[in-house]
Image 1: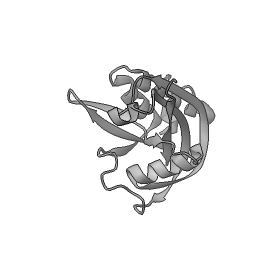
Image 2: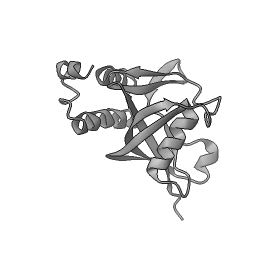
Image 3: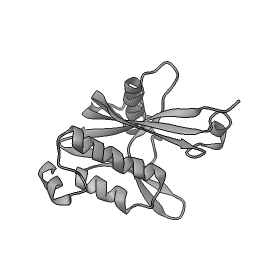
Image 4: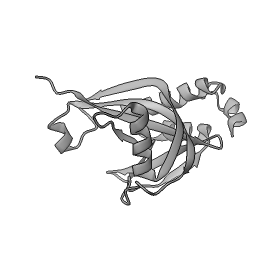
Length: 166
């Protein structure tokens, strides 16, 4: 029997026209820009999982969680050895949400273990574009582009048009 993909959620948190972006270190002294998120536990909706993951990983409460209409499957990648015993890969569903408040009540003190900052959409896009190529990074770029369309910002790849969103 084929193992399923692990359902996950990735959350683009918006506050004051900026996006929350993490800087995840990987071997080789490389920093990868990421959005908070994680696995969707059985019985939780995507929206519930998004709130839970952002609270646990960065200690932030979010509201108005909405789908981006982007789900990307990663067969064979993105799993710890333990999870690879159960799953064949991961499936990330992207959502966006508004920052509500800092809330450390469910925050895991270890969190993601790397910093998050608020970036303009243009800067977030450039961070993603300048990081090492990967299928996950391509999905992050697509997510920012979709968000720009949803929020009626000119296409994200035309840099001068993003200045109005700063």
